[in-house]
Each structure stands twice: as C-alpha cells, then as structure tokens.
Length: 364
Ligand code: PEP
Ligand code: MN
Image (tube, rainbow, N blue to C red; front, side, top):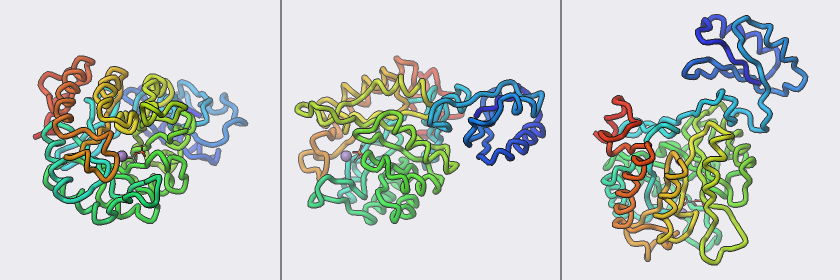
C-alpha cells in the first residue's frame, strides 16, 4: 500500500504516520522523492480500509494499493519516479538510472590471468567505460568446462581496479562465496541461472551492495521482477535489471533472443535501472554492435559487453567477445548515439545535455 503525503509535510508528521502504520504488522518504508515523501506499507493489505489510513493525518494526499505482485519493485511504489543506483568506484560515483548518462560495463567472460585482465581493463578504461566485468566463479553448462579461477581471480580483479580505477562487477554463484566476492566487487552479479536461487537472492541482498540481477533464460518479466523483490525486501534498494536474452525455439543463428522490448515494458512496470547485455543476448561478436546500438535507441540505462584480448583463445564465451579493437570502434558509435538520444556519456561530459556539473569528476 502506498501513502502519499502532501508536499511540505513536516518531518514529525511523517514520522507520526509511520508510527501509526506499525500496527498493521508490515514493513513500513519511507521513500523520499523529488517533491513528495511516499510511505510504503508492505503486508497483506486486503483487509485494510483505505479510509482508515487516510484518516491518520490531514497531510495524507492519497492512499492506494499496489495491484502488482511485485510491490517494492513496482513503479507505483515510488509514485512514478525512477530510481537510481549510485556506485562508488575509485574513479568517482557512477549512477545507473533513467536521465543519467549511459553506463558501460565491459570485460572478459572469465578472468584468465593477470596480464589479460589488466590489459583488458586498460582498454575498457581508455574508451570511457566505467566498469570492468569478469567472472571468477563461472556457471558452466558442463562440469568439465573451465569453472573460473575462483578466489585468485578475485585478487586479479582487485589488481585491475587498482591500476585503472574502474568499478568491478563479478558474479557470485554460491552463498558460501558471498563475503569473498563482496569484499572485491562494487556490484554483485547474480547470473541468469541463479535468478530464482532465492536463498542466494536474500543473502546477497542483505550484504547491502548493489546487485545486478540477470534475467533467467526462461524467466517471464514477472518472475524476474519477483526475484528483484526478494532482494528489495531485504532492505537493499540497489538493484539493476539485466536482460541477457531468453531461450526460444530457434537457436540456429543466435544463442538467445535478446528481448529489447523489455526496455519499454519495464519502464511501465518498475522504477529499477535497466542494463542490456547483447553479448550473451546474441552469442556472436558480429551481432553485438548492432544490438548494443539498438539497446541505446530503446532507452537502456547501461550496457554490458564482453571483450577479450584474443577471443579465439578465450576459456569461455570467445565467440561472443569483441576484440579490444572492435570494442573501441563500438564505443565511438556508442558515444555519438547516446548523445543523439539525449543520454550523454560519462567520458564526453562537455557536450552532454543530461550531465550535471557535479558529475564532471568521474573521469578525472
Ligand atoms: C556472464 O555474464 O558471463 C554470464 C554467465 O551471464 P549469464 O548469467 O547471463 O549467462
Ligand atoms: Mn560470459
């Protein structure tokens, strides 16, 4: 249930309303919007009379139920205001969200050795991207395939972070590794195969770090948002949704179907920031640039791109990885296209229409 207070409602009155709402045995959350404070009451509200809530205070402007099964993830929960996920990186704060510059996350599928991760990170940094990705723990279909170097790869990511100042995004597959991964990662990735691993969602959410939640390969949009709800219900508001392609009947020419229609659909349903991953989405490097650009046109908040110094020798996902040269070329187009769509880019701050002065330090 959403309780919307009038503009300028005194703080003491908001606190009083919150106290009164505690009798309903739910979670009460204060959401400070640009103009109004909205209070979310999450519990079974079917028996609660809207009038009785309205009568708690003359400052209450509106009371309504969130009809969607995902409550905190819904756009109504924030009274139509899109949320931001702000991540502190050594190079400065980076904000994921609508009306913010496009954020680019790039790097190899797996962290293979120090040289390749540090060299890739330097290329990623030079293009103006903000985050390095790379798997230490890999979810592979075959137990005989390379499983990732685990903990030692986390240290290599830390090294790449030290050298470039890029933020780090890496996957956590197992609750047992959460602390180790969270000690290095700026954003924890929960992969497609674990989207409905509810104990992982709850435990990762409780750590409090931003979470990148990939869409399960056969997950409906509602299942995906319900998975996000698990994280949000731990009190962690920092969730980014990543579309990475879904399974279809035709796998002959692409690995997955990259569902770009999720961008406008999610904008209607949720306040959470959106990322598109055309690398896993298509499975072939030659299709990645087209779909990355299409994702910008569709209005994504961020992109995830796999880049490898020698894709033919990659230990995982080589066929879909861009070479450094291919990535540099793509980033040139990404920059002009994101400007064309009024989106701006962190690395080209002077011409962007959407970047405020206080974010000019990012690449400093
Ligand atoms: C990855 O990002 O390398 C990965 C394994 O992704 P997904 O979970 O989308 O398959
Ligand atoms: Mn991969």
